[in-house]
Image (cartoon, rainbow, N blue to C red; front, side, top):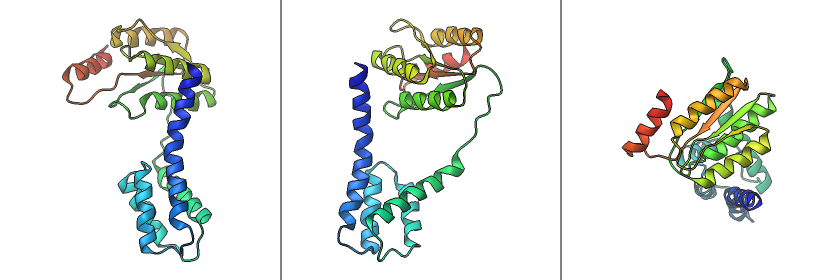
Length: 210
């Protein structure tokens, strides 16, 4: 089960990467870079889930570089450097001011909440922090299984409850256990929800109140 999930995750991540790399390679094959080529590159960036605004910034920067004789590897390297350059100033250093420092992960379905939990857990474990992960999406068994895998891979303490258990109750009991264990960080994953789903928004409010 774990192997299949990891295999699916890698396959999913490869889609955007291959789409971007293969797309640029196809566009630049036996071509000089002009305005038409840049527009095609921008389209590939957008289709690779980089986003319109972000893609515009990258293309605007590429326009300022003399690209008439440039090859595929250079353009791919420039795009990579520009992405890092644009994102780096947005990185915020998180200071653990109290223990446990709680992250409540929220968002609509499919935006990568569970993957973000794994990334955060890895980041803090690399900083020698003790981490707890709470599977508060108690209505989706697959989410619980995924988080348990992340907890094992990152050496985190895993908290879960019975299927359909009240998420607020689980979050609170996990918080108390995290205090007992003197954990540095507690990351609480929650179910996907749209802002116009009143019952799910009330559930989120309850978690915060509790």
